[in-house]
Image 1: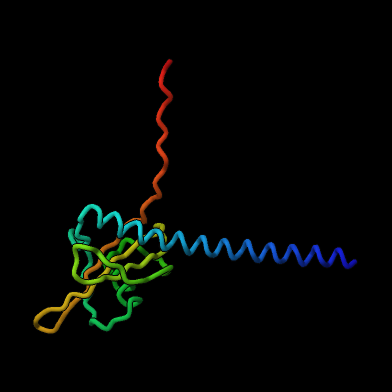
Image 2: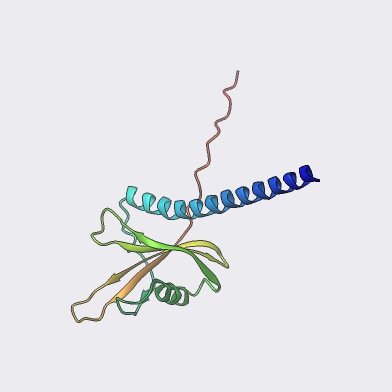
Length: 147
């Protein structure tokens, strides 16, 4: 009986440890998605603000959640979403930091970059741009040389 209880407790410990590893791996992969996008954009010297993007008319003290919500509405292609992570990021060619949000949507995972632009008239706005989550690099397999 004592041996049976010990084995049962051991199984619980194993399940808890595996759960913690899964949570850590999930959080780490989410962080890597944002880091991967920033690295790709930095290496290409690409200005993330180039191109078509929704302009969000909110004050500079709007919360990231408010900006994300307005960007989703303005973009019109995302219908349902939840925020997985939101944090500041820096691009080497941009003097100011911006925010990056990883969202899980009805169209899959997306990354939203957004930054506040102040205007001389005191009325600023948020620039925003959606990106697909970068796919992890797959190892290339070259065919074996013919003999």
